[in-house]
Amino acid sequence: MTASKSLTEALALYETEYLAARNLAFRSRREYLNDLKDLLVFLTGGQLITDPTLVTKRHLESYLAELDRRGFAGATRRRKVSSIRSFFAFLQDAGVITLSPALRLIPPETERNEPRVLSEGEYKRLLETVRGDIRDQAIIELILQTGLRLSEVARLHVNHVSLPSKISKEPGFVGSVTVFGKGRKQRSVTLNYKASRAIKNYLAVRPDVEDTHLFLSKFRKGIGARGIEKLVAKYIKEAGIPHASVHTLRHTFATHTIKRGTKLEVVRQALGHGSLETTSIYVHLAREMMDKELQENAL
Image (cartoon, rainbow, N blue to C red; front, side):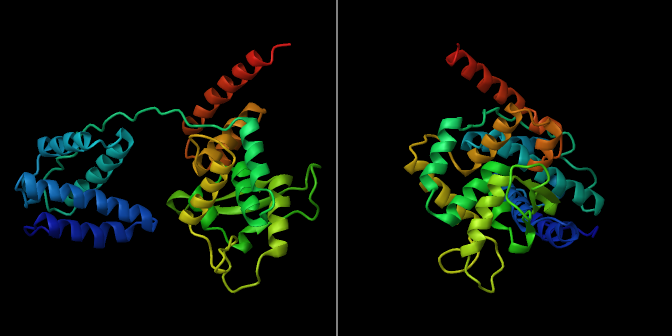
C-alpha cells in the first residue's frame, strides 16, 4: 500500500478496506463516498491535483470555502470535514501519505436553527385530521408518542412490536418497540397506551402477507421512508399547519414530554441520542412553551 497512488485509487482503497471493515449503515457509507467524490472533483479539476501526497491543508480550506459559496449549511460542511479527516487519516495509516493534511482542519460552526414544535392545539388537530385512516393514524400516533425517526419507522417489522395484554392507562400496561437507529444501534422504546391502541387497531386490519414490515403500502409491501414522509406531509397540509414536517413530530414529542415532567435521560433514551447535550435543547423549548402559555392564559 506504500506504492504511489492517485486520488481515485486511494478513494477506491478507502472504500474497499476502511469502509468495508466498519459496521456502517449503507446510508452512512454512501454519504462518506459522496463527500469524498465531490472533494476529488474539486482537487483534480480546479486544483489539478491527482496525487494525494500533494494535497495540503490550504487545498482543503479552499474546498470548504467553495462549499460555503455553494450555500451548504454549516452542519453539512462539518459532516464533510469528518469524511475528509477519516479519508486522509486512513491514507496516513496505510502509508500512502506521510501526514494527513486534514489533521488541523477546522470545521465550520453549525448554525443553531431552533426546531419547529407543534402546539398542543396543532398536534390535536393533526390527529383529528388523520382519524379515519387506521394505518396512517397509527404511523402519526407512533411518532408523536415515541419520537422515532422517519427511517426508524420505515425499518420496523411486526416482530419488533410487543403490545400489552390490555390497553390501559394503568401502570404496567405498556408495550414496547425494538428500534434500529443510527449506526445500527438497537434500543427498546416504550409504547404508551395511545401508541399501543393505535398499533393494535392497525394490526387488526393489516393484510396477512409475506412482507413482515409493520406498515404496508397499498401494494402490500413495506412503506419506505419517502412514502411515510409524503403521507405525513399530506395530513399536515390538510390540518392547516404551517412550516412543519414529519421530523417536527419528533421535536414535538420531546418538547411536550419534557414540559410534562419526563426526565431528560428518559427522553434521551427514547430519542436514541448519544448524549444529554443533544437532548438538552428541548428543555429550553419546553420552557419557552410554558412561558408563552402561562402568559397567554393568565387567570
